[in-house]
Amino acid sequence: MQAELFPVATAVLIAETFVLIVLLIGWLYGARRLEFRLHHRAVYSVILIHAVTVGPWMIMRAMLFASQGLFDDPISSWYQILHDALGIIAISLGFIVAVVFLIRRDMPLRLLKRTRPVMILILTLWVVTFLLGVMSYIIGWSAYLPS
Ligand code: HEM
Image: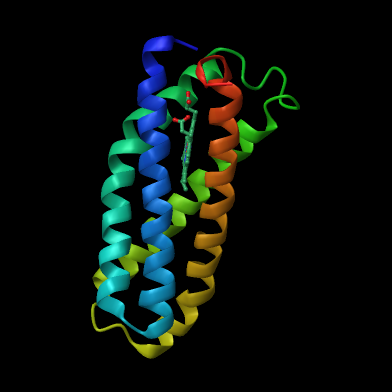
């Protein structure tokens, strides 16, 4: 790992922690209390922050790791492979749900009921992906972390 990239990885970790807190607030105080404005604000901030973290940084790093033999020893890099796969699924599902609600702005109750389990699945995948990301950070940047 290149030392000069350590601050970037740390900044991304902080941004992702913030994103997770915003998502949890959107769920606990937004969706569960039927405060859809709060829920929507949380979701759109998450999309914005993700566009500048996962987009340029994680995709670039994932491609680099893949070219450097990530899949040669999948057992020892299981957490990174799982992180990337679950992250892609969570983001894709989130994107689909966001587009569905942008098209159906009237939010019919039937659509809300049908998408609820998908949203809970996205949140669960998100938390697991985040924890695997923290694991990847600790293992990958251990040389630069204070002991
Ligand atoms: C729900 C979506 C995601 C969350 C919450 C998430 C979270 C995190 C966190 C907290 C880190 C540690 C910070 C760091 O090391 O930079 C990380 C690292 C990483 N993530 Fe993600 N991630 C997500 C999606 C993705 C996706 C879709 C990919 C690529 C396919 C990806 C690839 C990576 C890679 C390669 C690293 C290691 C970067 C490095 O330190 O060199 N992540 N992720």
